[in-house]
Length: 264
Image 1 (cartoon, rainbow, N blue to C red):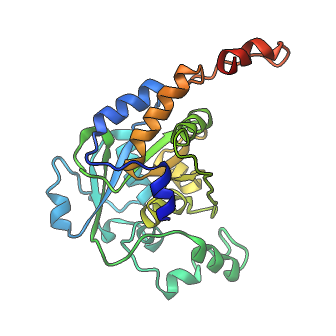
Image 2: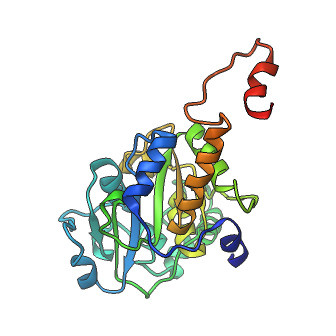
């Protein structure tokens, strides 16, 4: 874990969310608002965030994230605002207790047997429980959650692979992720909060149904210290002709002219 952070990460003295968003949009033309997530020790501390909204209804965590990414809102929640333990556990607002680990609510719905469901629950990455009472999300450019714990970036596969190429430009590290299936928020924000490293996911059914995630979007959850290096990498790749949008070259053309632009 520490080795990962020290290779492709950046020592971050301050995080300029607005400048980061400008850079991401310049190189990747993102269509969904980049957002950040931050945990708070007390609800009172969270409620002091400027212009924060507290929900009156009960929501999934996917909806709360979606309210920031799709609506541009700053929203804070505590455990009672979330529809169940599955949502709360992934952000550390509910304990991974015996009942949660049993997978009883997933049995026969997402997994054939309780043994399968329990194995799924055990496989989910989740941050610490009991260290914080609230979690807030906000557009990255707003600067209201400073410093954020993690940043959430939605992108198409073409945008995302260039983002990862930018991440790997300096201090190369092979990046490896998993997929727990449903509740794949554990692969993104759960994993990034727990391991403090870049975490990519294929958003699951619930994220698309309740969180407004589009069919062609992937999600990268990433600690903010990595993003200056990503932008530097994207700038270098762009100079080499490796930029978004990726213009189709044609399946029948002689490849030498096209390859010569970057490798010649």
